[in-house]
Image 1 (cartoon, rainbow, N blue to C red):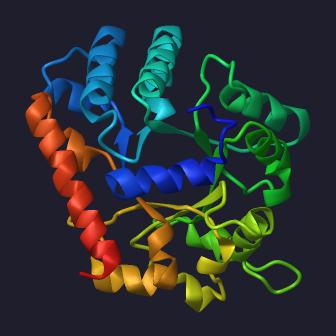
Image 2 (cartoon, one colour; image 1 turned 45 degrees about the vertical axis):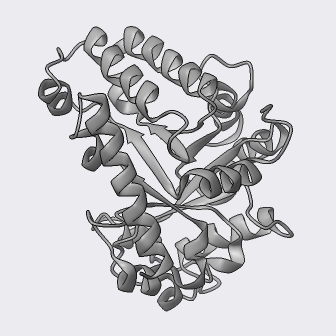
Length: 285
């Protein structure tokens, strides 16, 4: 399907309806390469990442390559990342490239063009962004994503202990930083069932969004959420964190699934189990 045929949010909703709410991260940690019997070099990286795509492509809602673990291998690693993104496209599976870019002006536009232009070598369906130079500094990436039917996921409420000192801080108008990010997404997603301007919200955050005056459901944003299911938050925690926005949650997992490899059957079985667990937790079962 051409990215211009529908919005990213529409394509993501279709993928979740077909395959469940699971997004599997392709995170080639050195320890995982070793456990798969692969060398910690570009050749091992390529074998690992392309096997993930060949087994999981067409089976999950999205795949999320973590750029850092490709970048650490230099130009050869970036070449592998290009192959991985192309292989996922060929499999008809959405990609969320985890790059967490955040900059200003023409530099932000440059990052956006690297990942969101359809003809770019590293083109992906969506990317992650960091808003902490000011959420409006991300506008060039948002504009390019919308122009080409692609999406972004902006860090809003993360579960790392250090995140709260920035995300809970208040602006001059009394809103916390996280709320300014959510309000930004809400503005861009207005009138859509599921928008293309997504948010990253950890499933195991210590304070629920509602406690911070944040209405996630009203944002109409897809919510990329690490920590759902057996490896983290269950139904009670998810009700507290996400409330009625649970239907918009894309549950992100990586090592919990990837540790099952390298056998393809074991890898697929682990993803299917994780998908069922996430779906059950998000539905409140």
